[in-house]
Length: 176
Length: 337
Image 1: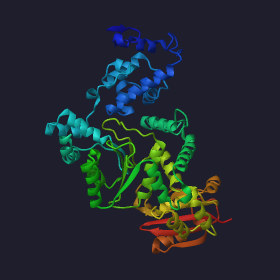
Image 2: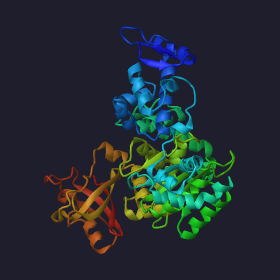
Image 3: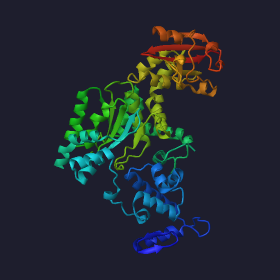
Image 4: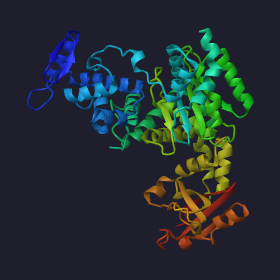
């Protein structure tokens, strides 16, 4: 392990080059970019933050609050429009419960660590002693619902709704 | 810049990229360009020469973009859908249908099939909830098609996330999609002829109903009325009127009140505006139509139409037309020179 003091982050040697590249994007005094592919890097970093945020079910407002930054700034970071200091990156990584290196590299996030199970489903899974893979399968199925046009407010499914759903699909899941 | 939340920002960026309007969404000035780009896509995908109704346009776009519409009117329709997609195709998302459609506020769902082949005509299934009313089915079809045209196809969604949720206050993205829907629902190639024939001599609700029956018989009167008025060459505004209180809910404010709807470009340019919640004067034919349900068209003096501060509308006389469906009066006003 190698500690890079300037931004107070701990990263592995394997990712050091990537991280050095990130640091080299800025000069010491103004934090301005002088590297040609800054845009690409910022876009990738922003996309990774967004990917993990969504996989954990956080809204932009929630993550910004947990990270101690403004929602507008987080929005810009996620869209690759703003640079980010190491300290703030660390705050985001902590809020997302991932290592900072995950944000700085192209490694895939371990799905087992990034799934946020809604309360209703979580309660049902506990009650019925459902395995992790079945719980995840139920949750994945909800992802195929691309849009719901409603005049009402958005809300999470209740435990009973998840139970109804499970009852309807359990034979299919068992066959799989 | 628009007041956007993060999700809207990202998705609007994707729309801009998908429609070739740049890497990022630069604000609402892009809306007309996005609408135009979607119209181009429709004209590339659909042969409009042979199409005579807006419903045919919807079917053709849906075919090109692999969307199948399923309208659920009865419990049997619901069971049939579950049998086809859940039991036979093993598409688990259809296990949510029963609970979703039992919510009267849910108007439509769009499901991207996980086990579909690339060439399947129903890679996306749009389910229209008509268990209680079919009023919104026409509009919801075009709204979902608007999403398919504007947004890139995305298979992988975040766990636990519904990408598109339209709540009581539609955001910029949904307003954009509605703008797209309004144009693709009433393509000029389809409605141009009927419009020019029905434009003369006066704008009336009867003419608008004829227009609807001609080009879009399954559309709501509201959708047809707005489409007709917004494409009209003269100065015309449309409205609904309902008996209700003001927002403060005080009983003594109950009256027949106006909800402005679409207007023509020339009315917009002339700043010909009806104010929300304006009272309908009892001397107006709109009031008479509300009382006895009979459709009417009359030339009226507008001096009795007053705002809450007592000022009158900017124009002196108009041809006012009104018809009533249920508790709601639908009407138009055209300035008389």
